[in-house]
Length: 207
Image (tube, rainbow, N blue to C red):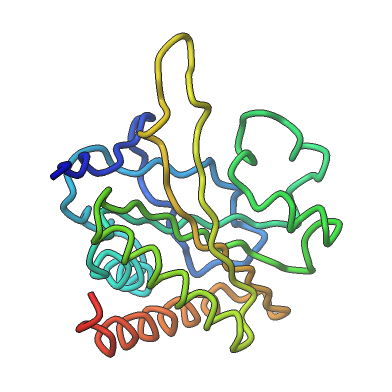
């Protein structure tokens, strides 16, 4: 029997998850592409300095069997210049480029909540990806502007192979609130954490 490879490992140095704060949207920063912690298949600990709703959502995602690491970033989309989406690298490289181009940019007061995660390279990881694909589809069907994408880096850089080590997933959640109140965003994040917790518990026997 062929043994499954080790879980996907990141190439870039780890960065801390972007923290959502209860400030106006104008204070939100366009984030760099997320870097997940290097290391084992054990779930990474959420940043305990982050708001409780963020910690809960990350914990709910890493509680899905087969998910190894997760983090939540936020990008204030009205500040993103469409022309910059063509750049090969930089802070916009991992944004949902096709969606932003199709809508000719962001909606008013729209924030992109990017929930990134990695999976084990085995049957458990594939089940996690399938389960979360279903969960995101259901959230979208129920009215959320949400989608799941895969992300990867160039197969080789400076003669070094990266292929097979950079795969990650991101849940794009396009959230718009005309009140410009970040407290509403955090409340929505907490609600999504609860929804994922309930779905994981409901279908725990499927894993």
